[in-house]
Image 1 (spheres, rainbow, N blue to C red):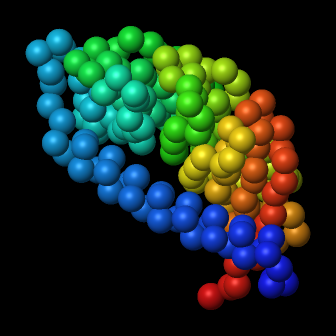
Image 2 (image 1 turned 90 degrees about the horizontal axis):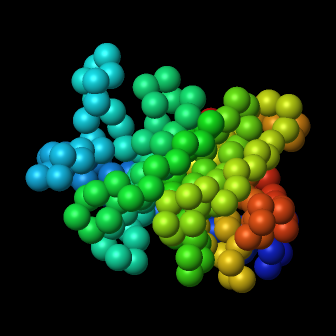
Length: 195
């Protein structure tokens, strides 16, 4: 990789995104273990799936003390986005036809979530009230999947992804910067060395 200010910036973004992904996964695991049904009867952590578990993939805090949670179905082909208030009541529920893995607040009134649909990276922009503004797909001819999202200046979103497209023979890191409407402002692929 050429050592330019832009390449150093993208490398720093990748490092930050990886740290956020590791921290978010730990927080979700701790939250899942500590949760129990509430007096309101809402329990986003249980189900009647074949293994008795339903996974909440990730959560993001909301300004009112509630959360927005990503809950994939048992086949992980679609994700239910749940907006809960501070009392754990579901106030909005939306479904996206994709396996969303990560959610983060990216603007004053919106969140972004990323994951995979088919062989493509998928990104959804979600209003703080829980409804989906838009969902877009990005990728090449091979398998690409989004692993994390973080806020960028001007209401944009950085998406950290793994790609097997773009003339690679292994899983490389792909960083995209999307504007608030889902248009790609810039992107770069960081080639991973084979082990």
